[in-house]
Length: 295
Image 1 (cartoon, rainbow, N blue to C red):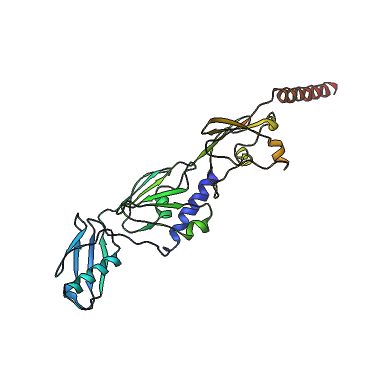
Image 2: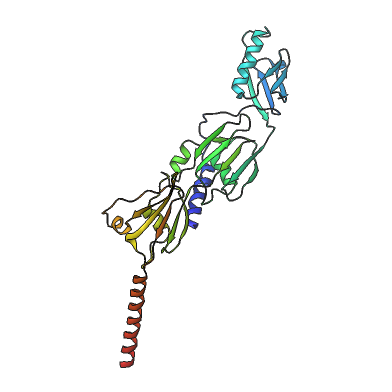
C-alpha cells in the first residue's frame, strides 16, 4: 500500500516540474471574465471589458460582440471582422488577452485523498490538480473525467501508471472545471487465501487474471484445494460458476483466466489437508519431545 502511494505521489508531483506541454485546446472566454482588447498601433482602441451574462462585450466603435465560448484568438478574429465590416479600420491587427477569470475554483470529486474545491487562477495540468487533491486513492478508476465549466463538454484522461505515457498527452484544467474520479471496477477473492477481500482492476491494460489477484491476496494457503477453485461471475442470465484449475495454471498446463468486474474467485478449504498438516505438526512435536527425554 505504501509503495503504491509513493509511486502515485512521485508520478503526480513529477508533473509539477515539467513545463506545460503544447495544448490541443485553449482557455475559453465565459460570462464574468475580464478581457483586454488591443489593436496594434491604435492605443485609443485599447479596452478592458467584462463579459456580460449573455456572453457579449460592449466595445467602442463597434457595439456589442458575442465572445463567450470562444478562445482569445477566435474572439480577436471576430472583433477584427467587426471593425472591418463597420468600416472603422481597413487592416486591423487585434489581440485579446484574458485579464481576470470570473471563476477561479476547480472541484475535484470522487476517489482522491482530499476531495474538495481548489483555487487556480490559470490553466493547470490535470496531474497538478490531482496532486492538489492528494492524488488518486487505491480504489480510483484511472479514467478521469473533466467537465468544462464554459461548455459542459466532458473530456476523458487516463492517468497511466507509466510516467512517460501519463506525461505525453496531459490535459489542461481551467478554472471552474469539475474533475470526477470514479471508483475502479473490483474483483473479489474469498476462501482459503491469506488476505481475502476486494481488489481493484487498476493495471495499465485494465486487465487482471486469476493468478494475479490470488497473488495480491497473499497466495492460496497450504490447506487450499487448488484444483477446485471456482470463478463466480454474474451474467445477464444470473450467476454462473466456472471451474478454475489453479494448480494446472501454475504449472503452465492451462492458460490463466482473465477476470471481469465483480467476479468472485473462491478458493476452497480442505479438511483433509488441514488434518494431515495438524497430524504432521503433532508428530514432529512428539518426536522432538522424545528426543529431549532420551537425552
